[in-house]
Image (cartoon, rainbow, N blue to C red; front, side, top):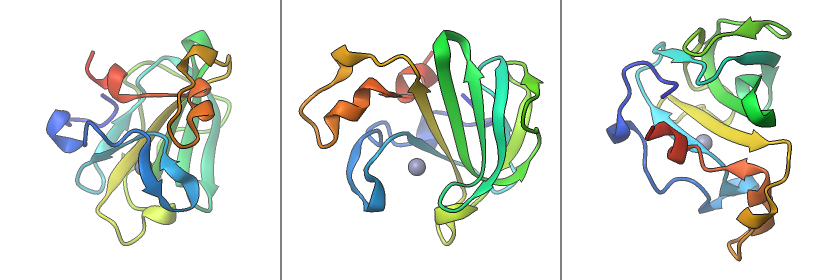
Length: 144
Ligand SMILES: [Zn+2]
């Protein structure tokens, strides 16, 4: 659980691949709601590919973790790590906010897990179902 103190009541267990979802068409992650400024911990040990700010994601961090999986944390209020650094599991990497296209919405962390190795058996007939070979359902990992 990347948001400090959050539980299963702080996210919707059906929010992965929710459709329709604006310009992205489907929601390729989970939104975990918390008070602005709540700490965000890395869910894996890994290498920070990018920590910065860009349009829709706002302030975000991309971490390459085990199994060639990239963990995406978006809409942060503050970044607490930097590009090209190593983080441990549970290192604080930022705080919950509303940056990017979360502006005007309740503060939350958008969390996605992408695999750089395509999992072709995950493809299904949902809208954009072929993209499921790259986007894993983070909710399956939150429960552990
Ligand atoms: Zn989201």
